[in-house]
Image 1 (cartoon, each protein chain N blue to C red):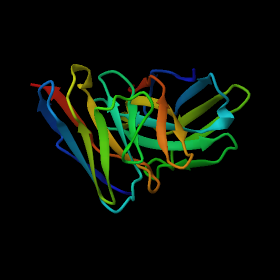
Image 2 (spheres, rainbow over the protein chains, first blue to last red):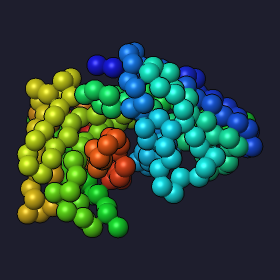
Image 3 (cartoon, one colour):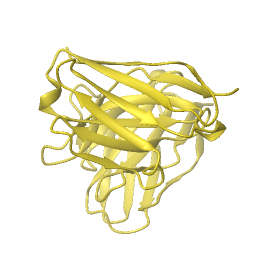
Image 4 (tube, rainbow over the protein chains, first blue to last red):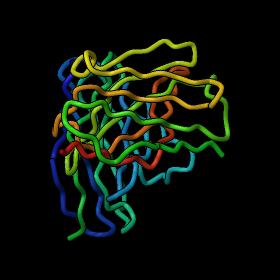
Length: 107
Length: 119
């Protein structure tokens, strides 16, 4: 299985801050990576697919980049509604696997 | 508007089989692949497996010996059976749509249903 490692595991930031989360794959996965947002008590929501493509309806302050083994997820200006846990997920090979999650909190 | 809704018993006894169903509304189940994902309380996401309307399946090797996913096109729903459950199988179980057109993504999720394994 491909292991996905996110860092940090938790992050505290202020409204308006630029926030960056990284995701590293245990082997190369080309650009076959998605990012999800999960708010407490809710199902995950797809934000970015194929490493850098914004899902329809997702605000442009969210972005993603990377290829191979190293990927980055960025919120350009943190909004209160962005408080959630974020997961990366690879689909280069089965089984589909997720990172352990990054919990984002406000300062 | 396509919606997914999980259903099934919230409490299952150890060693028994957990059975859940996911009803798809607003679209034909023949149009996509469909998956199950679970999340133990306070933990991360684990992919269980997927099915296509034709019956083609793929399961996570970590659960393969205990998992069966099936589809009922007449009801527009798919189901999960997980046998010989233990407390470690206590989790919120989500059904989701798997897009495989050029790229793969879990683009639509149900609300999830909590299944507790306890005597």
